Image (tube, rainbow, N blue to C red; front, side):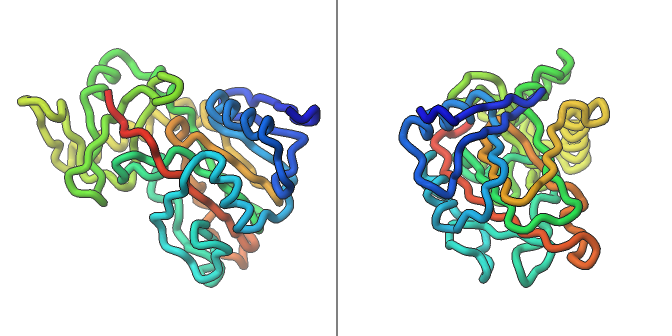
Length: 274
């Protein structure tokens, strides 16, 4: 492995990586270490990467598997597999990431394994927040854990597709969450048993609020708030961290400057199961 590869763990979740220029060829040993570290730290942050081309963004993403591009392709996207978002609809898709805390691809039979983000143009305000999901599960009271552990989420995009709310991460075995607070039509208690019960909207809404409150408990003390700087590139274990774009990401260009973010998602290999 390159002698320049160094890592600085962050207090709760994630780590900053130094000594790697993602625009250049990265040797196999460093790639192998990055794969190990994203599983261990769940979020890897590469600073000062300049502008990474769409083709290179896709090449890096393929270190982790086949890409799965289920989103709208903006005319200004640099690659068909790169999702381009912005606070200017002429530059990228607007309103992205503001429907509630979530993991990417919860509507898929196998949610995305990894999400990779690259900031191309940085506004003066507009963070992305990340939450370590194992810690969210560990913070539950015994009563909450018993209830949540019986719940399955039903995606509003895939009819009867359901996933357990709590399940073991396929690589680490640590309990995590499959959820999307803005794309859940209902919850099901005790799915695939004679006691199965679907929640009506008032109860569904109450559960979604309870999950939100648990993620942002103690005044967001357990959340990593990423303040973007020019050239940042983030690789996330999508199954292990929830995320949400801050309200400021939607402020107009005239107020905070132009925001342009590129994102790719890697096809999931594991269906959440107990």
